[in-house]
Structures are given as structure tokens and as C-alpha cells.
Length: 109
Ligand SMILES: [Zn+2]
Image (cartoon, rainbow, N blue to C red; front, side, top):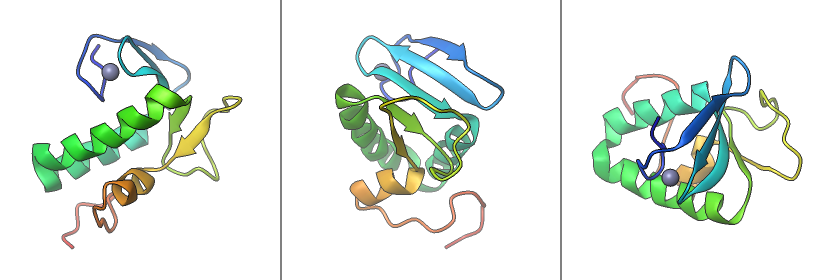
């Protein structure tokens, strides 16, 4: 499997029905909910490769320094990891200065 951040070969493990653990030699270990992955895909459809590149850069900065769980809802995540930082897609978009509306839907904004 490929790392969703840098595209390198990564070890990917199902932690439960909703969460995958990625272990990338460059980006480190991170956890991603499948719904977050869907948000990334939707974002990619709307903002293209350039938009995704900005998001991936932010993700990489986080995962290199911290244990990160990429979640759809940090109030109700599908996995509990001690000492992890929980990030929603919107946090990444904000950090990249990209204004998103509802990335869960395909509605036009
Ligand atoms: Zn990587």
C-alpha cells in the first residue's frame, strides 16, 4: 500500500472497521479513518492535485513531529490512541489557508 501523504510504500494495517494505521519510512506512523480518506478524495476532485499537495504538506509536518489520528470528528473518533493529536480535514485546510465548506458532500460551493 502507498502512504497517502508522500506516496511511498508504507505498511498499512487495519486497526478496526473504520481506521487504518500507516507506517511510512518518511512520514512516520499515523492513523486515518476511512471517512477522512473519503474527504481527501472529495477534496482532490474539487481542488485537484495542487490542492492535495498543500494538504499533504501540512499532514507531513504534523506526522513527522507527532502521533496523529486523522479523524472525521475529533469529538467522536473511531480509535483511541494515547498521546495522539486528533485532526479533522478542516484543520488541515485551515492550516493550508484553503476555505472549504462541506467536504462530506459533493455540493458546489
Ligand atoms: Zn509517507
